[in-house]
Length: 88
Image 1 (cartoon, one colour):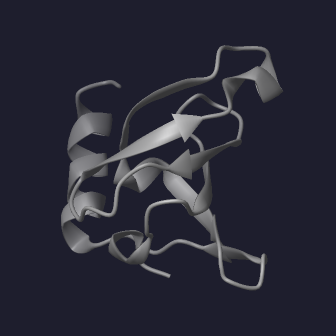
Image 2 (image 1 turned 90 degrees about the vertical axis):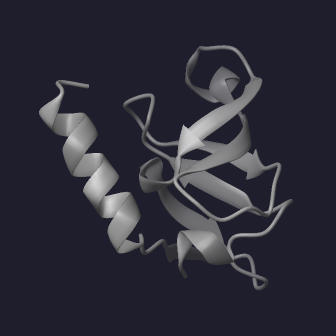
């Protein structure tokens, strides 16, 4: 599944906080950032909605409830390299 194919309401897993944390997609946009309701309470943080870089989304649930690995676009991969080079 491509990150640009993830629709609003889809449950996703992200690694932007360190450990994998789940959340619910709040938009159906395409691009380098996505809006997600993050379930931070599952790892001892707060639940909140916010922008997440698309390259941090690693898994999404399909219609059958199975987790699928997410593939990133070339632009998203390039952004990940650029941000990593800056030390973040």
